[in-house]
Image 1: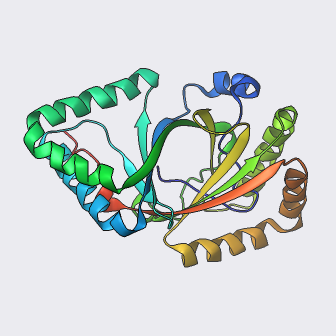
Image 2: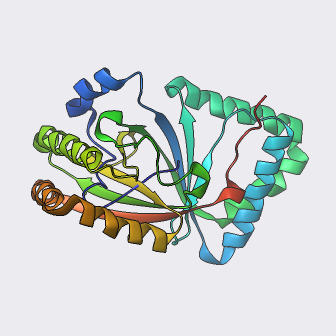
Image 3: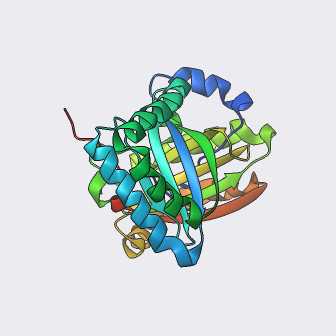
Length: 260
């Protein structure tokens, strides 16, 4: 999933379903659901793991696997795969389609590749996340094209369930301030549907690389000035805990089907 950050703008991932029900209903037509998989790989076997995944990508292309995924790595041998899906039934279809690829590939050829990948993995988990368009900011002419988004930050904010409404209001005000300042970067806010500690918000922001991202981040806060600082301090006062992750995009481990 190509995603985004920025101290307060980093708002966004996992909010409990209960206090997001109204928001989800209002934006159901626009929200994007993502099925995610995280694999923790043994450091000495990372090369072996990546070669196995590259082989899987090649076979998916050969046998017309219909579902795309974006691969990211966090610098600590945690590999994340994000599949855009329409609904929960679509997640089941992902695995059904993969079963067909294995049949065409042939189990004799598939099993050795599978073993190389599994031998390199410590553990893995699955989760589902959903975008929140009403709390996200996408300018008309974004600074970066999708193919330039090779570095991403997740700024993760855990909040008490009782503070959800206040957090949402602050998020909307920040988006309004970004728009009024004609900021040209994107801010994507997502929330957890399943498999993630809740309630929490994660703001996801992109850069070409780490240097580009942090340079842009500084420019953004200079642009927002004291107004942005006030919103940021209010936001921070509502938090229970904060976490932070950074990712690099892995194009060789990603899979984008050819358009028909």
